[in-house]
Image 1 (cartoon, rainbow, N blue to C red):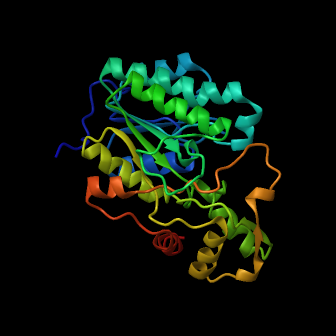
Image 2 (image 1 turned 30 degrees about the vertical axis):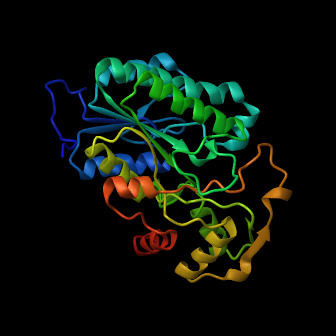
Length: 304
């Protein structure tokens, strides 16, 4: 089976792999996994500077395409996105630019240059009715974030039919210097401070463990996968059930968890009540079982 290989060219700007959005949680693990594979890899950041990464704002479409052309990597991984669900609702034009227009232009450049492309998307392309969702289910997003990410998926596959689209859900794991919280570390932080943690009992997800999702993305590349794959744990907990599992694994107090309801929350953007992802396709394709949420938490505990 053909695999990603490391082959440096004569130019110092030639790379095996470009991770656009390497300062985010998933991007950080993608870049780290690339380096473990001894690939010549480079990543970008937006916002606060990160040592070793290249600045890139996806709002600047010309800069994004220029970087792809100048670096001319063998593969581009694109986890970068405007992910704030309420912020997307407040700034739909910016969300469209970053989540849909920029991926389209990057996909066009990659297709023209013969570069492989992986675009990372979200469970929020679904409406939350009758989950878990497999890749054949019709997307019906409820909010601007989901609509723009779905547009990004369609733009990418239209411009680059051999691209790979990886949908994840509620990404979690340890991140760079642990400064940014995610769906699990936020809960851990509050519990360890002995503060109450409000969690929805009526919102179900399939949390994606960032280190495992990164490894799976590379496994899919190794197998020359194209099209859409769901990559997540094989569990479908509610947010409240996530909290209970975290308490069990890390030995924290369950009494600090406070039941709340998504249906009663005052949020700018609507959220799906069940956006859980069916991971059967990726398990069959790779002949590998996805971790459960508890198994991923145990790995977090053991690597803290």
